[in-house]
Length: 146
Figure 1: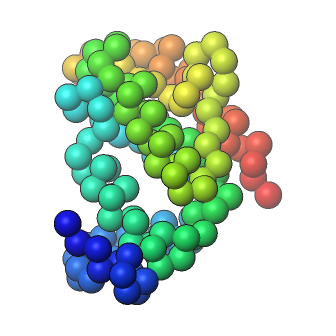
Figure 2: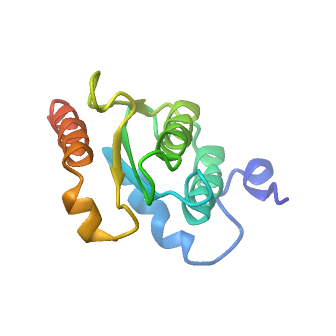
Figure 3: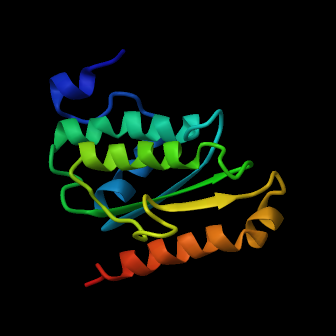
């Protein structure tokens, strides 16, 4: 694998679409990161963003320090891997000095978890418990607004 960013501390050597995302990540105060669940965990695309963001951290180890982050996941099954996907997002936060928040006990312990019942947005709209978990997470994040 490439270690240019770690050796040179100049960011990523690859001049591709991730370059457009870097300033957004650097300037964000809050992260509300969500993912569909594939094969019981977060999407490969989100994992790639996490992996590629190490170029920012190599350049400035405190780039994400004390930003606030919460996690959401949606799966086709009720227990389709949402908590594992959320844990992966929370692990990214932990490793990068991002303060993670959740909706708290009784329904949003780790973050917001939705069930689409393999019906896309129509299924999500019917998932009252999942929508309640999302509302709890957002309410908690709002407590950190300036």
